[in-house]
Image (tube, rainbow, N blue to C red; front, side, top):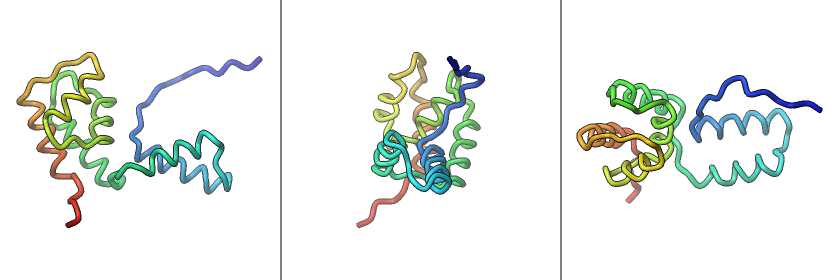
Length: 119
């Protein structure tokens, strides 16, 4: 029996996943059940364009916040926290601590990329 071997794990953002599902849809003409459910789930979220996502990722990495890794940055980009309290809820899911000063820097950076609400 074939046993797949994981060579490397690379975190991806929800936007990247949605783009990959679009490529699969074009290639296979239709999605499997799980792919369809995933696409349905992803459609409920506003996502940044690939260029803005990459720019925000670089800016967050440029803040040089201790203990923040790629997986945390991608989760921040996916959820786009608007307040320090929102960011605290995201960070609580991981075994890391970030001081309030760095959290404020992260939120300020995210707010520059947040979509404006329509009136």
